[in-house]
Image (cartoon, rainbow, N blue to C red):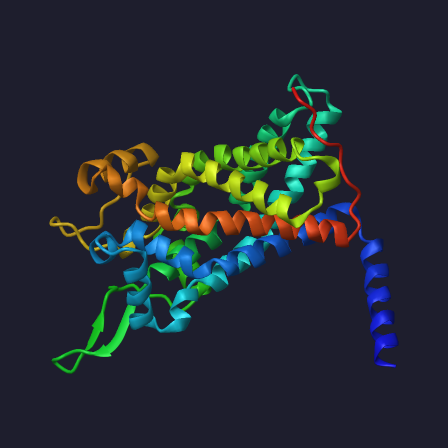
Length: 331
């Protein structure tokens, strides 16, 4: 009886899925891929942000010591601080990213633009899709970074007080972060750090899809839908793309938490005028190595993150019976 009810429910779900337009299916597949991938690597993402922004507290610590410090200060749930904002952001971000990638790609091929029909199309479509997704969801990324930046030590100090690593303002949730950011800078406050984000995401997103599709092109047809193929190609795509654009990610994170950083000797927060000022200032005051702070943990994180994302996306497309698109041909 239970088996037959389960089969009926499954058939009803598939019937409902089949009625959805392809774009809606692509949105769902992309959103699921992003949420699962982000949650899987959330502890590593938190440590990476702390290494990028908390130069005084975490600069001399390795990955394992940073993990221990967060566990001491915030407990096990501390590894997921800011992950709620991350998931709320990544679902529409990944959904838009994958969906607009398919849209831009199809549009380029239909218009017969002078890009050929090879992986260059994936590069251009991926870049445009990444920029679109960032513009639509950036305030949530800002909230995620500010929440992840906070490290509270609730252990009693020798003087009977409470130790604390962060200073005011502190945030209780996404709404408070966005409200305070808007009060401080208006709409611009919600998009603080968007410059390095766009400069970084355009090549990163483009390279990610370009490398993924180029690697897939060399895989025999019978292995095109294997999980191992998606994991391998996705991992390599994320590894190469992130390495090239990583310094811009460091600038973005530091710009996002500027108002939470310690005061300078003049009594105000350090402020980067723009992306290039940020790069120059970080090299001059923190050393060029800071541009790659957290890169090792990022390698540990980005490989499973991108691999899981592509695998879930392709699996969801298969489950929802999204028709396969035209494969890229060599340019």
